[in-house]
Length: 108
Image (cartoon, rainbow, N blue to C red; front, side, top):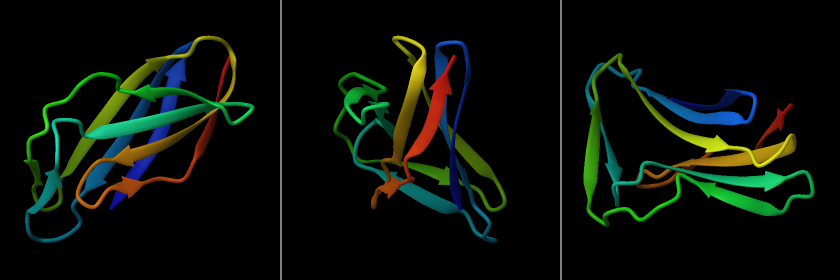
């Protein structure tokens, strides 16, 4: 099971995905690069304004193991350019990719 959330204070925003292994056996998450999370941010007019985390990532097949009954958290930080209404589409870049519904949030 995986869940996504957006939190923060002021202009500092954190996007978080938590993966919980509810089975009785360890599970392995497969990634095609060192990047684990991708967040696409839009403004109130639905214009794309940022993708976080930014940067270049090694293109190498990697894995993370989540033990039975345990959780793993992946997060990314962003500083909003101004107060206002935004939305984020958060993707856990496993194979296959897990995409969460657009999450609206506001920056005071």
